[in-house]
Length: 387
Image (tube, rainbow, N blue to C red; front, side, top):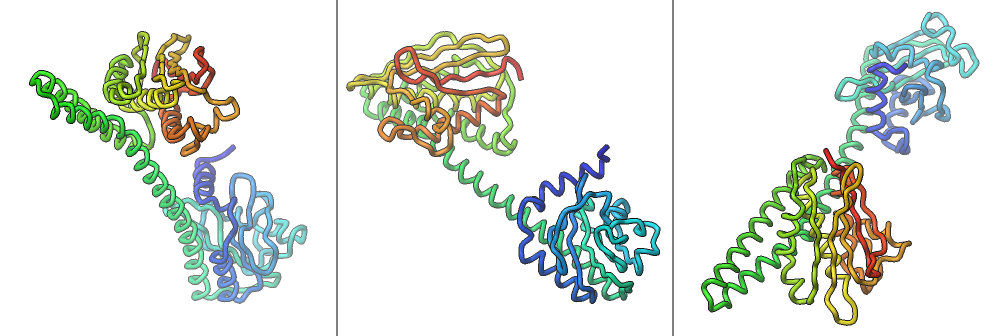
């Protein structure tokens, strides 16, 4: 049975990825330095998980893996402190160990210093040994301890570098997503302001300005919502969301595209669902924008249908268009960020659908593409009934 300490050790080892990546010249240099300073022919960095001891870097022999119960370092890991043993054959902790008896090796002199994470979790040891009895002076003991700290520093530096790379990647994606998703409300804002400035009728101008103010408010809410979503690590808020109201706001932002292309959007009653209103608005915006851009044929504007069907455990929302559709072999690929389907008909499809999939997954739902009755694409989303 795994103890609390075993679980903490396993999690730390997993976070360092030390078992799945090469040791690297930096860890190998520390092992060589330990052996040189302490005057022994062999040294090793041992990582000990729940079942095995992993020798990840060594000098004097080829590193390998053994069962945890056979490990000499496992015998001292429960109370991780520096250990120096002149002759392991005379120490009750080690005299029956296969590394001492000759079954695996014939260790006599043994010394180790624990590898402690900044949280105090011992994940293994920096170990030196020899086949002849030996001693370790105070300076060498201190050097071994300092080198074990350096091993952990290397692992920490690697972990922080990976986190920084991941953070930069997420920041780049977030900037791309905001840029993509703000285009429609920004276009609506500009269009309504142009309409207000060119209108000679005070009532029409006032109405256009009111719509522009609504678009601006939605832009602000979208930015705030995306920032909150990013700070929450991708988690979605939960509240009652009226999808019919969100659809109305979305159609207002897409008004210029609908008017200029001669498109038509027909929508049946939409339900109230549990979710994040900003994210679900982005979901509908991206689905409708894709349908409007890729629907239509022979110079005719797109015909888009939005519907909802109750399921046992939630709702299935569909957005159908009358365009060329998405070939079955492309229906998974188009959900990958920056992927495109057909070069003519799928311009801009990738980032929007990638965003949609992340939003749906954050709500515990599913998303996919089928054939629409009109022959185009039917993008469907299943959202759970409750949080």
